[in-house]
Every structure is written in C-alpha cells, then in structure tokens.
Length: 223
Length: 223
DNA sequence: GGGGAATAATTGGCTTGACCAATATTAAAT
DNA sequence: ATTTAATATTGGTCAAGCCAATTATTCCCC
Image 1 (tube, each protein chain N blue to C red):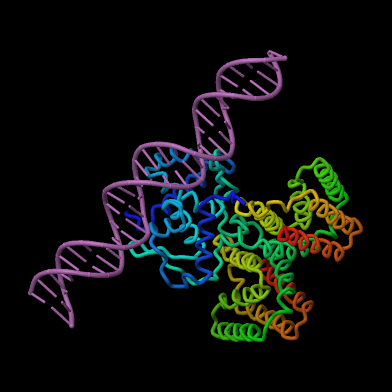
Image 2 (image 1 turned 180 degrees about the vertical axis):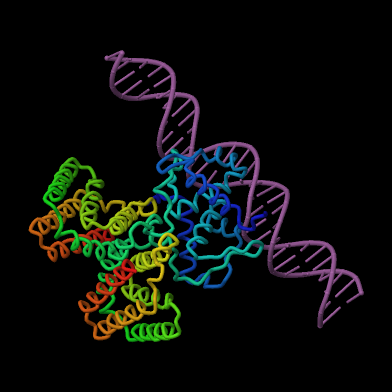
C-alpha cells in the first residue's frame, strides 16, 4: 500500500496521529524539528512543510526559537476543513441546498431546458458505456438545474460546492469510488430527478435530488 | 519596512499578487520553482513552503513533473467576492438556503440553544430600545440557528451570505433602511421563528424564516 | 512522409549539510 | 538572591545535488 500522496501530507497525518493519540496533549511541545524528523525517518525540510500545513489548519503553533506547540484541537480552519476533511458534510450540505434550489427551479423550467437536461443524460450514458467518467456531464446537470432557479447567487454556491469535491485536496479520497458501477447508479438517480422535473412536481424533484446526493455521499465514503 | 512575518507567508502573498494582478491568469502555469525562487530572491525550500500554503488554500495546484498551475481565482469565502450585484438575489438566496437549513436545525435543537436564542432576542430588544442597530444580535441569531444544523459547510455559507450584505459594495444601498422601525419588524419576525423552533415545528420554522428574509429583502429595496 | 518508440530536457520531490537569528538555559559576577 | 553575561537549544533560511514523473524531442522503421 504505497501512499501516492505527497510526503508532507503523510507526515502531517502522522503528526496529527501522535497528537490525537495523546502522545502530545494540547499545549505541550513537540520534539525539536531535527529530532522529530529523524524519529519519523524524513528530512527536516519535508517535516517543515508538514508543520506549515498543520500550522495553517490550526493544529499547531510554531514559535521561533522556542518550539512547536500543540494547539487546542477541534477547530476547523476556514479553508482546510471544507477542502479535505469532511466529504460527508460537503455532500450533506449539497443535499440540503440543491434540494431546496430545485424546488425553485421546477415551476419555471421551460421545455428547452428539459431538452438540454435530456441531452446531458444521453451524453452521460454514452460516456459510461465507453468506460469513461462522465464528470463534465454530472457537473452540467446540476448546474443547469441550479441556474434554472434564476438566482445567480444560488448558482454560484451550487457550482462552488460541486467543484469542492474535485479539488486537488479531495482527489486522493476519490480513488475508486468512481467506478462504472457507481456511475450507473448516479445516472439512474439523475433520470429520476429529470422525470420529476418533466411532470413539474417540485416535491418529487426535491426528494429525488436529496436522495441522489445523500446516496452519492454514501458511495463516496464506503469505497 | 521589515516584515516580521515568516518568509513563506510573505512569499505566498507575493505570488498571490502576481496572480490577482493578472500576470498569471487562471489555468496558466507559473515559472518553474528554481526560476521563480531566483526571480523572487529566495531559496527554493522557502518558495516550496509558500507554494504548499497556496496549495492548501486552493489558490494553486501542483502537478509533479509538470508544473504549478493557477486554480480558479482565489476564494476567501465560499461565495466569492463578486456578489455585489443584486441585493434582491442575495436575499432570495438567503431565504432559500436558510429556510432549508432551519428544517435540519429544528429537530435536534437542544434546550440550551433555545435559551441562547432567547437571550439574543432580549439583547436585540435592548439595543433597539436604545436607538442602536442590533447588527451583531441579528448576525448571531441567524448563525446560531445555522450551526445547530450540525454541518460546518452550511454554517459557513450562511455566514458568508450574511456578511455579504454588509460588504462595502452594498453599503451605500443600505442608506436608512435600518431604521428603528424596520428593526422592530425584524425583531418580531425573529420572535416568530423562535416560537416555531420552541414547539419543534420544522415547517412553521421554515415558513417563518422564509417570510422573514423575503420581507427583509423588500424593506431593503423599498427604502 | 508518417507513426511510434527510445531518448533527452524540464519540472517537481526529497535529502544532506550548513549557517543565521530568536529564544531558553546555565553559569558567573555582584 | 538577583542580575547579567555566556552558552546551548530551536526554528529560519539557504545552497547544491540527486531522484522521479512528465513533457518535448529525436530518431528509426515502415
């Protein structure tokens, strides 16, 4: 099991483990950089990169000439957390927001938009059949629906939450969760959503969207 | 002007400047590490520490053997900063999202949180009575509810949308819309929301939150 | 001339070793 | 015992080099 991630990320995880395992409780000082580097079997520059990452997400504090100290655990950083740590929360948030947005989108959705969505799913089917990942189609499907709500603020939020999932930070977690199998599930869930939109049933669309994103989150975690 | 901060932070800021100044637009590749380090007059390890910081906050993406690439232009908040356009759309978006979030928050809301909300409204009443603007209480009320949903991504979105209203871009439109009069309306709407939460009625809370934010948006526009 | 595989050049990843600057500790002097 | 100076420890930074992944180039064969 060779970890393909960069070394500084692996080191950061190891140090986090040392902290949560109680080896170094809140407020205590970690070994000196030279010592800790040797102890972990890595070079000092690599360890330093890891410490900077931990400093940014608020796990430690580095005091020049003094040492590195464990900070009060359990605090999410503004950017670090939403990027890498909580796919579950991200998908829950998408479920809540997108299922609310689709209600707004259902009523006013013109025939042309329904055709666009139909075309997107057709392309998605083709991509899956050829063994590719229908990433762009997935994105288009969710964005077209969001934009149909006629509110640019909502569209932007939906877009940025979608893109969070595919940020470089989350890439390593994606791993094998995007198998042809899971994409077939996603496709049929998309079809259910579109079906609800075509009969202009807001509550059915809301339920279908919510179910889709929660199921998607589960698939993400279980693989 | 000696900058006391650590070098990697100064370097990160410089690189951010190069990006926002348009020197390297989204998707383009930065100079090689060796070259960029020399160009900025620093060593490669120090530049690397800065690049890791920028990678963590999503400004750049580092591809081994290929180069470092500018990612979708920086985002301090999840909604981006160019939202100044339409106050109406902003308040509509808040209505959609916060009324969906409060549904999640209603069921699991403990007694202690209800008391906190009650205290916030008491403070709000006092502020209004003394002719001040209960801005902070307003913010707290919405944030405490959002956080009760137990999803930090949702909390962040609610917070950033709230703060968007008070961005410099929107400030001049606010004018005198925050009169004691309008704040009294806002207070009574908050009380209606809290009442629904206290009887643990999700749909009533949802309706009350939606009505509050839409009414707030109308007050914003009509003054 | 075109296509494909071997090769070279470029780029990030990581290490070793060293020196400087801020802090903490110890020893000396009063 | 307190203050002060010397010393050790620790983070901060730099330089040079080698490895590994990627990309561009060259060359060979058809």
